[in-house]
Amino acid sequence: MILLENITKSYEVGGNSIQVLKGIDLNIKSGELVSIMGSSGSGKSTLLNILGMLDNYDGGAYALDGKLIKDLSEKKAAIYRSQFLGFVFQSFNLINFKTAWENVSLPLYYQKVPRSKRKELALQRLEEVGLLDWAEHLPSEMSGGQKQRVAIARALIADPKVILADEPTGALDSITSMEVLDLLKKVNAAGKTVIIVTHENEIAAETERIIRLKDGRIISA
Amino acid sequence: MDKDVLKEILSVMVQNPMRTILSMIGVAWGIFMLVIMMAASSGLENGVKADIGNRAANSGGVWSMMTSIPYKGFKRGRRFDMDMDDIQFLEENVQEIDVISPRCQAGGWQGGNNASYDNNTGSFNIYGETPGLVEIQPMNITQGRFINAADIKDERKVCSIGKKVFTTLFVKGENPIGKYIQINNVNVQVIGVIASMKEGDDSAEENESIFMPITAFQRTFNYGKTIGWFSVKSVDGYPISKLQDEIKSKLKIRKSVHPADQRAFGSWNMEEELADVNTLFASLRFISFSVGILALFAGIIGIGNIMLVSVTERTKEIGIRRALGAAPSVIIKQIISETLLITIVAGLLGIFFGVLTVELLNNTLAAMGDSGSFRNPTVSFNVVFGSFLILIVAGVFTGLLPAYSAVRVKPIDALRKE
Ligand SMILES: Nc1ncnc2c1ncn2[C@@H]1O[C@H](COP(=O)(O)OP(=O)(O)O)[C@@H](O)[C@H]1O
Ligand SMILES: [Mg+2]
Image 1 (tube, rainbow over the protein chains, first blue to last red):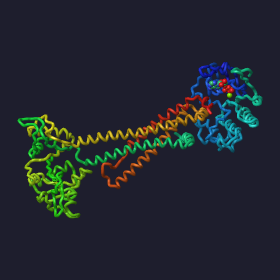
Image 2 (image 1 turned 120 degrees about the vertical axis):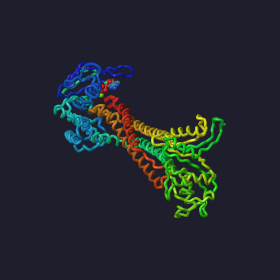
Image 3 (image 1 turned 45 degrees about the vertical axis):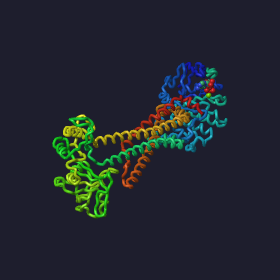
């Protein structure tokens, strides 16, 4: 599903170039539940953003579902993102003036699904994450765990192949963290490839495979 | 723009209603100003044009003055008069003349009372005229008739009087026709009453006039065959200025005036007067339009500015939308649509209140009995439609900058923003 070959990435900071990824080779198969671990600053988010086509890479090659993802136009990237990927962020990234169901349905808006159909599908997803009763609530009225479940419902709505989660439990207490992780495991069990970035061992331990990142290189996969 | 997109745009706009309203006021005010300015200049134009009345546009007057070049033994500075024979000559020899009307005037400016009836007296302009006058300078005949050819031929001591003359000399409701009034102690029979079709000072002048057959006038006041000046109208399609030049050159020969003498004859004509008025109002319209458009642009720039702030504040939200699959073009379209929607709604409000104000003003003026130099202010549909088009185009252009600045940030940088 995901194939990386010698991916490199550096950032320009104040005239200096900092090499963040120093040659990443990786193969993640369809349906895997993978965690990416490493200390803060090791390049986990950078790697995930490249996987999510939210950022470009400098060298190497990245293929998603057999398609080479390189120097995509913003438009192409947007299309691929909406077809293949669902995102879950540490800070939830819900739109605060939209209700739960509106947030969940937003990806479908950009796929030009009519509003009534969007609502129907969004309510279905909210039911799957146990938040049907919260459909008309704003994010500000929900707890962190609930917001993250809304975000997961949103990541699932367009039926993507891969879910990319960057520290999905980073802002949650340990009990809610486990609930959210269980939800992601359920999503994986339903056939989706799930990649979770985390620096918590308890979370990583629950996944099938742990990819350890250190200083821009994979030290074990 | 379908309903779904509109809903999405509105959901964003109501996030900061105060800001949306404030930015709308700028544009509404701008287009309101535009409408008002254009209406004001049209009102002024209508007022001034009404003052001119419906004098034939191809008409004018010619009078003799003083020579400025010595010629054929005459010194410069010679004064000379035109007479009835000159008029007959012109009538017979200049084909492009439609109507020519010799005229004499007595009284008026001197100010002494010169007409009376019963115990009523007044100071009026006394004119010697021919029937042709009303063809050049139409007047409403409210009672009786104007001078006719028989009056001229028989040198009848009759007169048509202006309505002010009537109200001064006669009792209200009295029938003046057939009555004798005294003009400089000469009995003259009233044959009609006229009312001016002009406005303002010009109309007062006409309404305070007494019109006699020119032949009777000349005899009564010992003018012989001399005339004061003449009014003339060219045949349709022939420029009055050109006709006046032709007439002047013919008269120069008859009166032994040097062909190059520019000061021997004076003249005016409606063509030039209208051209002056039209030029004046074209510039006034242009100035009004410019001022209005500037106000409009100030408003539009205000909206652009506010959209720019709004887009910057929404960087994160826009980043989320893009991560969820919104292509840059979709974001650009959304921002431009937002700008356009604000502009159009604001513009319509401005137009609505502008037109409403103009209509109210119009009704008030009409209730006060349409007169004076400002009347019937209107905005043409073209102006309203044109400014609306400008608004739409400007709205799109104004939206471009904030729209592009919204997608210039990479989605990942936008998402990182807190
Ligand atoms: N946009 C950026 N500009 C400059 N440096 C960056 C940027 N994003 C990340 N970095 C740097 O790259 C390194 C890796 O960051 P990141 O991938 O976020 O690490 P992690 O998610 O593992 O904590 C860090 O040193 C960070 O400072
Ligand atoms: Mg990180």
